Length: 353
Image (cartoon, rainbow, N blue to C red; front, side):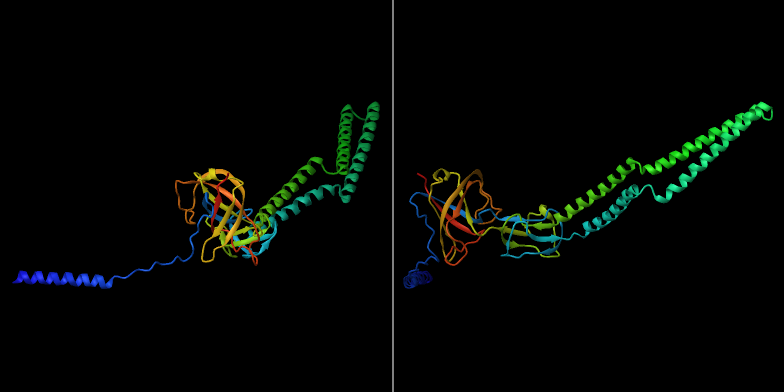
């Protein structure tokens, strides 16, 4: 009895299952695409990933030295000219050294001025008086020598007295020579070698000041070319590490008047591409734009493909060759292409004949 009950229940369950499947079967509608697929319009062509860039490439601006940012003078979208100041770093440390060096320069120039001031007018009369005194002592010594010589003839003096008088005359003559030399040296002015040393010391300080001024100028970051500020990643008060910091550039500028597309063509397909190849680009997103492109150059260097989906850390064994294409037509205005640097576009190239 139990066995037959089990068989009946099994048959009933199977019947219920069949009925449930038959009743519940529904047609699943096809989900429409959010947008039409990007299809290569050329019968025989090459498709590649392209990245929009300024015609002169986007330039990452950094300071030559690390330091504290004192002020940032531009913002995103500002149009800048070549050599225009973009930002300044704190220069107080160097300015303090310049102040100290200028004080040293004053002292060094004073040494040069003191050399040129020689002889002082008040220094001449004492030396002239010393010369006259020495000459008078010489006349007196010579007179004593003559009287001693006359006294020897009469026996009033000895030969020793004469020798003593001659010694006094020699000493007096030496005093005259010394006094005359001191006066002549004073009137001749300073020693040329002293002037050379003093001027060299002043020149050394001036060179140090000029060197510090150059270091101070390095803390002022200027635009290397005309362009537009595309990105600003720095604010006043931040500390930047200079050119060694490549994680993010404080400022990025580029010329938006003319845009290019850099397409990465697989090395296996590059033989199909020539300078005469026709090219179009197609933007991605909800609103697609078709760009008229013209090949500017095919760069003669193959490299590993660095990007797959926009991330610069994805690597692959595929090697690509860059093809740079010019965007033909106005950019950014009314009725123009609405694309920006860094935007990814699909590039299609007709096979060269």
